[in-house]
Image (cartoon, rainbow, N blue to C red; front, side):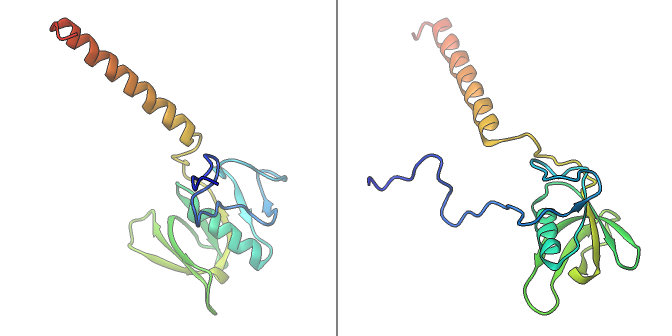
Length: 151
C-alpha cells in the first residue's frame, strides 16, 4: 500500500445520505433516485420522519413543512437535531420572519417545493467545465504572447 487514497474512495468521515426506507410519496410510488424536487413525503414512522428531515436538510432548495395543526410553512431547513427527548428542526420561513423551530413530532409531510439549485451539477460536470475554461485561457494567453513576439 502506498498510502494514497484511491480516486473513487470518499474522504474520511464522509457519509453520503442514503434513505433506509421507502416513504409514502404522493408523486412517485417507487424508489426515487436523484433530486427530491417536486416530491411530497408523508412519513409513517419515526425512522422515516428522521430520513425525510435529513433529506430536507441536505436539499438545496426550499421545502414546505406541513404540520399537525394543518399549517403549511414554506421554508429552508438549515439545522436539525434528532437527539434527545424532543427532536427539532430549525428553518428560515419564506416569509422572512426570522428563525422558526419545529418539533419533529409536529411534522406530518415535507414537500420539496423549491428548485434544487444543484440538481444535475455533478463534480464531473464542474471539473470538465473548469478544465475547458483553463484550456481556453491558456490558448488566449499563448496567442497574445505569440502576437507580441514572445513565443
